[in-house]
Image (cartoon, rainbow, N blue to C red; front, side, top):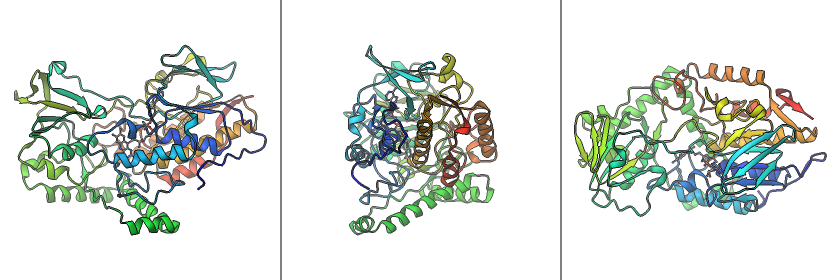
Length: 498
Ligand SMILES: Cc1cc2nc3c(=O)[nH]c(=O)nc-3n(C[C@H](O)[C@H](O)[C@H](O)COP(=O)(O)OP(=O)(O)OC[C@H]3O[C@@H](n4cnc5c(N)ncnc54)[C@H](O)[C@@H]3O)c2cc1C
């Protein structure tokens, strides 16, 4: 790979078309790379934060680590043979993504600290108009691509008296970097992805830990292998060896998808792996019972960690399963009437979901707002387009990411598709393309059909699906299915305007 993107434009295309990307996370920057690679020059990436990296810039809690292998959670065309570990930690990931923006000369297109508040389609002009927070000016574009991610807003439970608590209290996504936890009585609310990383990381410092658990999570052990210098050299010198390793890692995660895709035997195998790990780590049967989920593995996010169970088995850690009733100045009161005295409360309670468009109020044809169109269920055609929103695309939109692999993997496929759509529209000198309602409807029928017998739609209360058990989060299939589907690009799926 060269150090900057090539930029050859096919003859007949309008190089000057204006393209806006919302968000400079790993997907927005990937989109920017693809646009530049395709030869478009007139594009802007809006980012409300003061640096690129998205999730990996914004979050910085102790123990933050990716649960997808480093060689898979990185761009396939931008090989990094020097990952230090099999599962990358936050700083190393952020350094990789920051370098990506610089070396491909994308930063000149990025406007940092610039929050887009509204995006409005003008049918007569065939343009998207953006407004920016704190600015009077509006800016117009021919194409709008949302890469605003899906974890946009922290979710805090409604608890009576929460505001009365006098100690430090913050969400995992707003970690207080100067917090001193030494010897403190710390309450962790929630036991999912953030909690299982934070608990072992802060344990050596704290005096006492109370973990308020509504539902235990299924956990598989993580062995975070450190790559030797010799392995790194080999990956650097021998592309085939690197690719083989990457493929093996992918196949490893694909086994998870097989387990949750309606194959009872494989699901039981996965359950046995999790239960064996729990049994091996937790000797106390009472604690083990508390930590055993009553739903199928994969119904909620399967967690990967090597040290959570070990940590919660310590005598100064308490798993509290009584529900939280209220809070007061000095702690949390649970349903059994116990007052838990605490100095610090850390909310590991996830994000408001679904929330694809984040704070951007997006209005398409006939003044229809995207949040209204999605009030029943967020849906898209191939995760990318929504009828009534011409020349609007999403990276990793509804049903866009894989349940078993990297969000970058799916974004590589969808960004290629978006580029092909734009190129096709440009080649035909179209004013707009707008996915057909019947195509969209038929597509989403097949999506829900796929999920009918999968564990993603299973016997638990999960954000993967709505109350009618319609799955909106994951792509219906593996990367081969997605590649096959999205590579068949045709404007016949779209209403077009010249
Ligand atoms: C704590 C945490 C851990 C995670 N761990 C994993 C993991 O282990 N494995 C995995 O596969 N995935 C993980 N994820 C999911 C992760 O978000 C995705 O893998 C990936 O980073 C999504 O990238 P993105 O670019 O789509 O979105 P984001 O990374 O969310 O980036 C979106 C960007 O858009 C910007 N933005 C939003 N609204 C606006 C606006 N109105 N104007 C301008 N800019 C805007 C945001 O500031 C942000 O920079 C994790 C997420 C979190 C929060």
